[in-house]
Amino acid sequence: MVKPQLTIQLSDAHRIPQVGLGVWQASDEEARAAVCVALEEGYRHVDTASIYGNEKGVGGGIRDAGIARERVFLTTKIWNDAHGYDAATAALDESLKRLKVEYIDLLLIHWPAPSQNNFVDTWLALIDAQRNSKARSIGVSNFNEDHLQRLVDETGVAPVLNQIELHPLMQQEALRKANESMGIATQSWSPLGQGSALSNPVILDIAEKHGRTAAQIIVRWHIEIGLIAIPKSITPSRIRENFNVFDFTLDKSDLAAVAALDSAKRLGPDPSTFA
Ligand code: NAD
Image 1 (tube, rainbow, N blue to C red):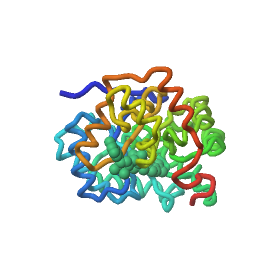
Image 2 (image 1 turned 60 degrees about the vertical axis):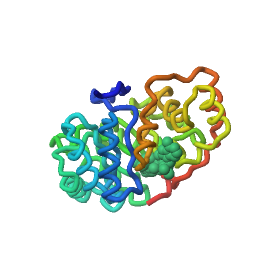
Image 3 (image 1 turned 120 degrees about the horizontal axis):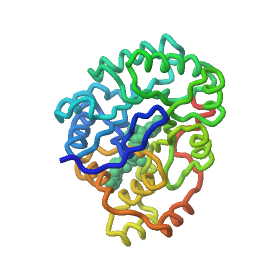
């Protein structure tokens, strides 16, 4: 039986499950096993990238789980060394081959890499990939407001989603608002702050109040403020724990307490300089 899960409708009318499995820093074999466990547990959304080096494992995990391809929402990303129309098109074909799938549900430009000044041409490749049915939805990752605006101004096509670093210690309120004003869904990478937010005393207090774990409180927080979260784990018990979040809610005081934790400190690189 598939557990109930919340989904968000993207601006192109496709729906994305609000909780997915992240697999950064997992080997092919680890990703394969983790994806299989996650799908058996009820996840229907997996986030990988060509740079993670585990697309083969992710595709294998989907096949191992025996879940029909069209029931899994699969994301991959075009890396910084494949910017430009031709390179991005070729990189997508390589990802499809490694994953052994005919289409990607959500194809993202991984970083804007503004010093290359080539993300608009890369975006044109994604627009064509969608026209050619190789990608159902197209979006970006780590784009600031000015990068998003450039895509819209120069191509007339807005991404459906922007995947950005977002967790209780880095809440990105301004960029969330900018995304929303352009009809772009916000997806949270490192939603648990790479584990660093799990020992926060405010989170631990809320966890105790609800009889939940810190990870469950944080995943639930992303859901309740309208985000899409992709917590990473390769440990079966944690994969289960992070998905067991659909039978409780946070109250106003919980949400206010988490909102006050924002320290606007990045764990990852700055998108305006990372190349
Ligand atoms: P995360 O915030 O998901 O935290 C993962 C860490 O928390 C791991 O060390 C894991 O062992 C631990 N953890 C997970 N569940 C736990 C639990 N229930 N209890 C205790 N510890 C637990 O960090 P992440 O992996 O950086 O981010 C998640 C996903 O986001 C990645 O796997 C990847 O798919 C994506 N991502 C995207 C970008 C990007 O540039 N687009 C960058 C980083 C990550």
